[in-house]
Amino acid sequence: MRVPLVSGEWVRYANLDNAASAPALRQVADAVAELLPYYGSVHRGAGFASLVSTEAYTRAREVVRGFVGARDDDLVLFTRNTTDALNLLASALPPGTTVLTFTGEHHANLLPWRRGDVRHLAMPATPTDALDALETELRALGGRGALVSVTGASNVTGEVWPVQEIARIAHRHGARVALDAAQLAAHRPIDIAACDVDYVAFSGHKVYAPYGAGVLAGRADWLDAARPHLAGGGAVRNVTAADVEWTTGPARHEGGTPAALGAFAVAAAAGALRGTGWERIRAHELDLLERLLTGLDAIGGVRTYELWERGHDRVGVVSFNVDGLDPALLAAALGAEHGIGVRDGAFCAHPLMDHFAARDGGSRHAVRASIGVGTCADDIDRLLDAVERIARDGPRWSYLERGGYVLP
Ligand code: PMP
Image (cartoon, rainbow, N blue to C red):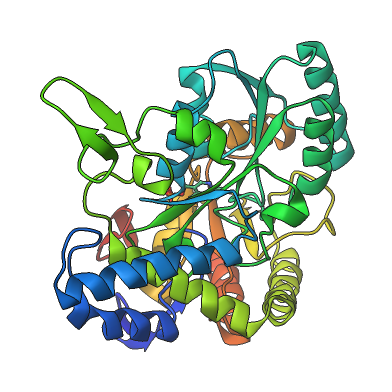
């Protein structure tokens, strides 16, 4: 895609904002286009389009089941996104369940739990500290019902959390584990059974599917006993004038007509990612990540954000700041003057950014560059060149607000 610059010139768009929403893969767009003519009411009609849509929706669920490595008796629910999935799980907690999270989680994995009993653990200085803190907290709970909810990879630093070890500790204390895989699902296999987590949540729009669907997969018992997420058609076995008998399984929480195209898209993306191969994806992204980090380190005044030591496993997400430069201004200049898409702000992780500000004395806001399967070395080089120029000379234009600009 070519985009206009503030100078009037047109350039190829360098999308380094994959962690926010990743562009649809061609296979995904093709799969959705193929189904579009048959798009009909799912689970509700006897006509041909309805039958095809229902069959495709059912198949999409099975593809996603394979993608997340769900156990045979796990439920796989289509939701709107990760936020919706974690809110659903939060409303399904049995009474008396204590939720444990680290404070640096994305707000989607912090706020839903605050409606009940939640304990936020301080950000650990090392992965081992994370495990020790959990062990201590779970021991103090003395076997009372608990859920540990943890991110697979940070949306600010890209650092991969030790999920398997966390699950081992949690299970030893009789607690369950939910994995916020929003930032992991596009980069690494998320295997529920292999990681031994109880629930996993992710968003289609971060795994190269267009908007419309997210996923919550995991143990059926809490979900089947929970109040239906959306009360309405499809979520019931029978309704009388005075009463209702809710159904179980995915339909219990998917009341109303589902966003079937979103589900088809997630399934197509899952198939495309698996077809490409995780080792290939990982090697490509790590190569570009190395290029990005090395390049940023070489620019004077650039500081990157990491919770743990460099070298810890991470996906291709790097947040950084240039000394003396407002990150919103830097991001606006990268977009308008260089055709490079990044994100800036506090990344819906305010407590984590506050932690960094307190620890390193840096800003609560930063710029984030994130790598995807479509990123190429030229995207990284353009970003490095642009950051270096802006750091040296400042933006060439004045910016009124993010995305808007005026002549100097
Ligand atoms: N968790 C993490 C780690 C994320 O990065 C995001 C999205 N930035 C979310 C949860 C929420 O995802 P969504 O906005 O698709 O619900």
